[in-house]
Length: 218
Image (cartoon, rainbow, N blue to C red):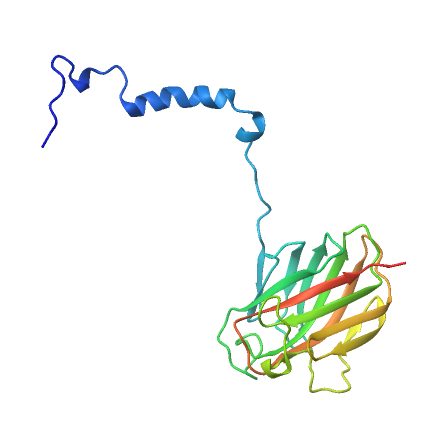
C-alpha cells in the first residue's frame, strides 16, 4: 500500500533528488579531505613466473622474482632469478601447472625431479656469510622424512650441489629438509648462484622453499 504524500508537495517537484544531492555534496567533501587520503596508493604487483611444469611466485614478500626459465632437467635446469631486499628469511612459492606424473617427461608433467638453479642478487645492504634453503610441503611446517620431499636425500654423495660464492655445504634431513651453503660471502649488490636437486616422490600441487641469508654475528 502506497503511503499518501502531503498535499501540495509532490515529490517530482523536489529541487534535488537524493542522488542529485550526493553528487553535489561529494566534490565538496573531497576538497576538504587531507591530501594523503585522496592520493592513490599502488601496491607492487605480485609476479608469477611459469616455466616447465611449474610456476614460481614471490607472493609471500621480502623479495622479487625477476626471471624464470628451464624445464628442470640436468641439461636444462629450472633457473629462477631473484632480488632479495632483506637479510631475513623469505619464501618462494612453487606450484605445479601441468598434470602430476612421478618420473614422467620433464616439462610436460610435474614429475617430482627438479634440477634447480637460483641466482640471487643481494640488495639487503648487508653481506651474507651463509645461505640456507629449507623445503616445506605445508607452509611454516618442517618437511619430514615421510613426505617424500627433499634435497635428493637418497643420494649420499651428491655431485649436483654447487654455489658460485660458497665452497662447502651441509644437508640436514630430520626434522627439517635444509641445505646450508657456508664458507663464503656475498657482498651487497652482488649475485650468488646456487645449484641443487629437489626430489619429491609423492608430488604435491604446491610446496615452498624458504631462503635464509645469514649475516655476520660478530
